[in-house]
Amino acid sequence: MNLYPAIDILGANAVRLVKGDFDAKKVYDQDPLSAARAFADAGARHLHVVDLDGAKTGEPVNLEHLRRIADELGLPVQYGGGLRTAAAVDDALAAGASRVILGTAAFTDPDLLRAALHTHGVERVLVSVDVRGGYVATHGWLQTTEVRARDAFERLRAQGVANFVFTNIDHDGMLDGANRDEAIWVGAAAGESGQGGVILSGGIGELSHLQALVELKAQLALERLDGVIVGKALYEQRFTVAEALQALAG
Image 1 (tube, rainbow, N blue to C red):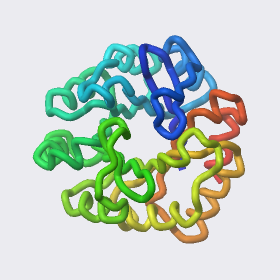
Image 2 (image 1 turned 60 degrees about the vertical axis):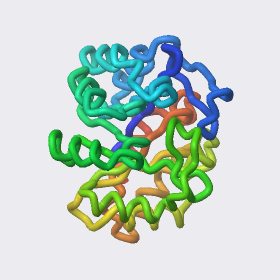
Image 3 (image 1 turned 180 degrees about the vertical axis):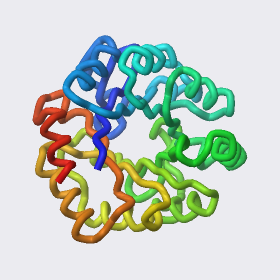
Image 4 (image 1 turned 90 degrees about the horizontal axis):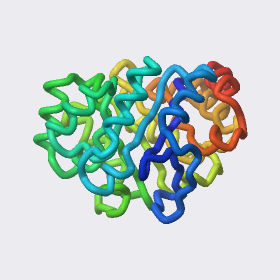
């Protein structure tokens, strides 16, 4: 499984929220590039960058930070937050994103999703299924829809989506570990082996949480479990990037 250290940008700082609450932020670095460089220097092979300002406003705000991170570090960067128009998707890719993450737009604008998949290919477009209480949340996690998470996967796969990010908002920033049963059904709901992957996010707080996911993937042949996003645990040095990579290598 791949490791995706998280750089969430809000007000030009690298921050972490708790359960998506913008009022419960903690600043870990005043420069997102500095935070990203620390992960890169520690051995990270991928980066996960989220424009929290963009998620709130509905359009990208931190493309310049993305550009600096992509240009100076040379690592694959997946980027989301506020990508709700074709122009915004194009701008994010032009700024250096190797893959873009559509969240709100994937549920509110099927034409945009279809166009993005057609124009840029299924490997460069991920859809974020962000869930609170079993239902999909959108608009920077500020609105909860009536779409059940399991139904969302089925609907998105029918539209041609092959790659996903799944976040349990109720566990985000809580460091309490991924839910085993949830990881199982997400791995199954994302589709059959060889058709893309799903990256899990939310709750990783110690190495044993990563090891448990690797063991679960092997035991149940959940080949679609492709990676895991880790933020707070790395910032607070509960384990290192090197230790996480080793754990995820099994």
